[in-house]
Picture (cartoon, helix red, strand yellow):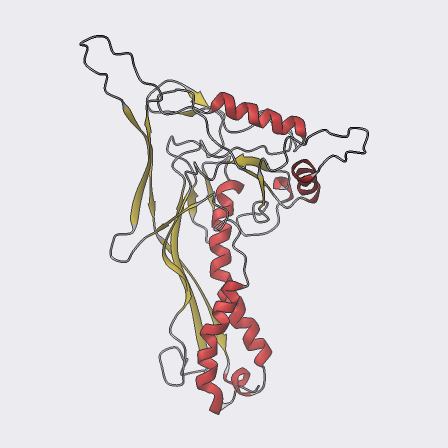
Length: 336
């Protein structure tokens, strides 16, 4: 199909179609993982939101005869305020490309601009974990990104605090072992010993997701533990795999990256557990990834000097994590 003058209206119509195909063709793993809670922000409702933790007491008190009932206490935790940001990308389709049978290149460019905004959103989500042992990082735009949680510590820390008690908890596994049965059990024990509410009382948190990077050895080892079954005819016949079906395995290929989105081999062994039910990470979206007004001859999206059609993609959102009780990490590098 040639993109000639007669087909210009079809071409600009095609712009939106191809843009949406670009979005549909990109699998946004973290957005659909359940690790981040979605929070739509309508227009004209401000550009900030405050997120906080709130815990009730775990246990009731005795009531003696004619005594007044004890009122349950509720403790507000730490808060985080987040501000919306916008991301954008633009491509140009030249007059010659539109009229001289470069249809496949046009399709490639339009599909790509559809993906770039969605992929940047996914990268920002992944970098919450990537830089989770730091309090901030400098992103690809040169901006300083605050990734602390409500207690002003990094997401993954050895001494998180609570508001209503002097107790602390850790969600970073000591000595950062690589994934194995022993390290998984150590992670599970850490969770049991460190799951507390804002009063310092012990609570139970259901961790349902085992996340890793796309490191082949780690991925394959996890799959062996989560999916293997014992043959009745084997030497250990009848042995039940206690991990079968216990966790959903989530592979996060963008976690081992630099702030520029390049591969970072030092983070390839990262792994941890997470609770989707108790997640305290939020992705708030005011402007879903979309293509702006279709270019057409004579409108404002056509460059009068070059006859180029400009296609613009936009999105508006923020990512914020007020609490750390829902996710754990091991760096897999043997550091304390």
